[in-house]
Image (tube, rainbow, N blue to C red; front, side):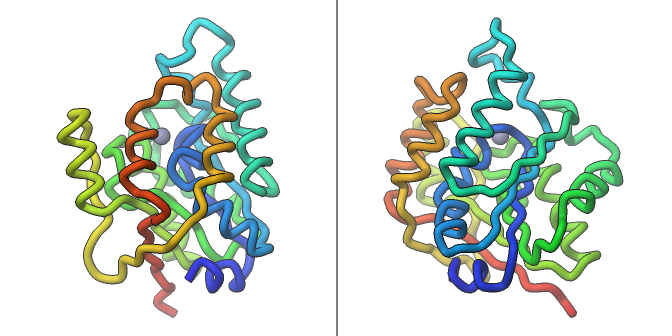
Amino acid sequence: MLRDVASRGPVLAVVAHPDDESFGLGAVLAALAASGTDVRVLCLTRGEASTIGAGVDLVEMRRAELASAARRLGVGGVELRDFPDAGLHEVDPALLDAAVLDTLGSASTLVVFESGGVTGHPDHRAATAAAFRVAAAEALHVLEWGVGPAVADALNDEFGTGFGALDGDGVIDVEVDRGVQLEAIACHESQATDNPVVARRLELSGPVDRVRLHTPNR
Ligand SMILES: [Zn+2]
């Protein structure tokens, strides 16, 4: 299925934070890049609201971490915007759509966190909503990534998190290789050390990622 996405043409991942491309989409993006397609990332915020790693020049550090993680994943280009971290959902949607459109190039598929934002973060939901609006207007495919109900329930039980599941019609569990993803995660040094939720999610998911492909209506 990922091979079909890759064969359709270039792919643009639309995410809210530096590390979403690795912590979340890493295995999917690595698989797409390994299939030979051009994969790029649009990251809408610089991650400046993170309390992990605060006290250093967080913006510059996270920019560099994103660049090296993207290289590790095989991503050919990163566009980093400076919409407000933790405030993305309050930005005029038209501005977010314009950022996606500006970065689109010849992409035929957008890769996103599922519509509920996976962790429930409102920034994640805002980034995905912008991608879906542009995809509808431009007749693009959208590949949603998320976790299944068993993984979401286990994480919420263990950590008190607000994970929502990607479930229902059209979901597919694809086998993935976590090796490259783990290396990309490690590039995010300011965020990766002592991140028990990410580690546990990957453990619970095993070698399987859950996705759903939306095809355009025309
Ligand atoms: Zn995030």
